[in-house]
Length: 83
Image: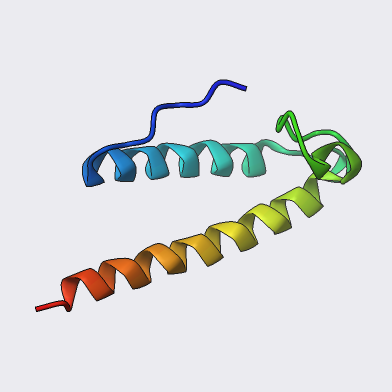
């Protein structure tokens, strides 16, 4: 796996989030019903992905995106309200 450098500015981080969102959306929209049930359809090279159908990975990733997105929004709001 090739890791990208960590964004050092808010603009760069937002650009990476938007790009990752576009890639994720394309993977979900592009999957057929058969691929959704296919074990190993996910391109993620490590972890539990090899043992689960793509629909389970999609559920898990969406849950992670919601959880971490809410964390980021909380930090943003706390930063903005610090006075």
